[in-house]
Image (tube, rainbow, N blue to C red):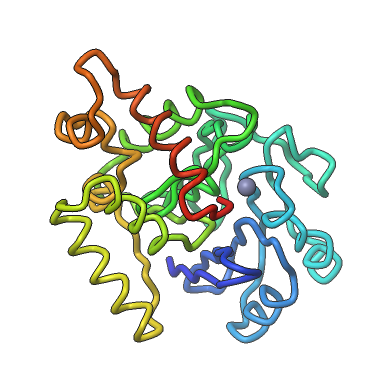
Length: 255
Ligand SMILES: [Zn+2]
């Protein structure tokens, strides 16, 4: 199984997963042209499109891709049913594609109906988790988002998180603002900066590393509470809310 991440729009990633016999699935195509070009270039045969949530920067490419490849089956959550989706999927469902099982998980918070797709070891998590950060919480769904992040933390450590945006440096700058002396953050920041300078792909993004460099996954750490001067009675969820709301105004990056 091979994986490509296509950089699209301003900072989106569109994922294409393909097999040796060139069958592929496409995840969250917010734009069509660049995806079609890649399919032609790699001589791929697209079987399905997987959509994680209702935002247009994840769905706008579907219509034109379908016009070119009408045999594609589009999967997505209920919230997106009017967006050329052929099969609505929900938590607990398993779909069979590329000779593999893909399990569906509910990961609300960014939107209420957000889902993620797991084909071991890949987790297509849309706008739930980004490298060193997490998606913006709309409609005040902080508890949903917190629980979705806890769910992702429970996946095997070797899980590869296939996030839908590239915000790593901005996320690390925020994290280092909160934890300026954290060695893991400093080390990862240097590594990512070098990769970006050399125009290298920052992926793969492993869960075991995110547990070290993603402060939204580390809200239960005693010393994180200490750094942000929370009293002892503040729990992990309250720390999460504090960090997420703070991030909304820090650097004003829309994620
Ligand atoms: Zn979104």
